[in-house]
Amino acid sequence: MSSNSLEPNRLDDLKLLQQYLETHFGKTIKKGAHRTTLEDGIFMASNVRENIPITVLLSDLKKGILDMEKFSEEHSGNIYNYIDPKYKKFAERMKDIKVGSNGGMANVGKGEIMISVCSGIDPESGEPCATLLKNGKGDINYNNKNEEIKWNGGKIVGDLTGRQVNEKFNKNLADDGQSIEDKKWVPFRSSDNNKYTQEKLEKLNALYFKAVSDETVDSLDNNQLKKKLINLLFTNVFEKSDSIVMFNNDGKFQRFFNLEEANLYYTDKLDSAKFECRANQKNPVGLYCKVF
Image (cartoon, rainbow, N blue to C red):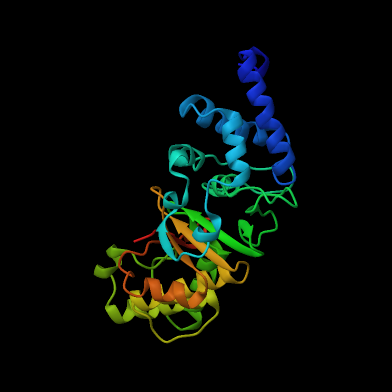
């Protein structure tokens, strides 16, 4: 259905929404298919699903319906506890809107649009109080700090592809005077417990980590390898961002302001931590971000 086929009052509402987004988000989400996706998502969530008049919505969005000042300082909690209660359902729908930009930005991930749109508009600059980033240094900027956002199992990753790691691992194996039949070996496979001794697995773990990081260690059991991978992957995050916040789908979150906090959080959660380790794909080594 085209916008011109809407009832006159709803067409006026849509025009108001379009003007609001152009004024305050035009720099980060350019006109085109991605902007239309955002317009449609907000319009449907407010005017149709939750029966919130657009004029009321835009007035409140401008002031901010997410208490960004409090939320941004918390280590853990649920983001919906920082949303104006009457807009909780609206925010839950907004969370699922994912768009990109034909202005040079990669895809805007789950939850990022919701946080940015709901955080309010700076009255002096006219810019969102939480600005979407397109420079690869985090996902959102607020209070002059860049934050990485991962929602519902999003990954933090290493620098090398799985194929590159596999090639280096096999070279490390040969250089160490060892060999195994499996030329696509990756750690944490339970089936390997019946193929190799614990001593052999710990040696393979060490050679695998050397392939990922260039750090030489003699042996690593699974938990030791997990700790080293967690440290390595979060180090990558903090080289680009001031903090990282990870969410579960229900809005529960955990935020780390530095590498030490991330390492400490996972100390007693190593059995639950899930990694992606590929040998013949481009996917780099990654950790699925989940709040426990």
